[in-house]
Image (cartoon, rainbow, N blue to C red; front, side):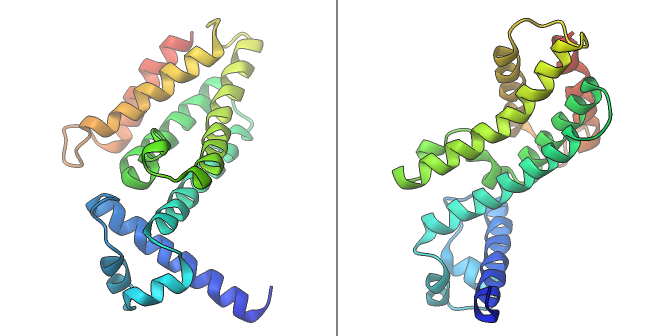
Length: 194
């Protein structure tokens, strides 16, 4: 990678991180290219040097956040701990992203409402990769007798469905802290697996 290519890559990352921050504050539909540019002390026109349009920028924001989440799941999965503890930590990771990166992470639920046909295939592929980490730990837990459920795919859908619902009601100043919610969800959802 040349110096120029590296500089462009770093600037794109800076723009994406800024866009993620603004999207999480305002919602991805209300975040504007002007606000993202202003956050970086750039002109709106300068953003178009790096991204075709707002949809392209949002796509790359979602890709970045989803890739980070997958990285954390992968790391948890490869720890030498029980499947129950791996699943507990994966639940905590999912809740963290669902709450702290709500707008960019939320697109995982209904990507066809946000992304063009060209972008939909890579997003669905990444979403399936994300779900596959939950499948792996659930199947490993069944195989070694830690989990007694029979339908691993159904268990994963039930688990992720309930985790995604947190975005509908979570309030930062609610009665439970993020850590408390992660523990409560883990305790109840792990009972379903047994």
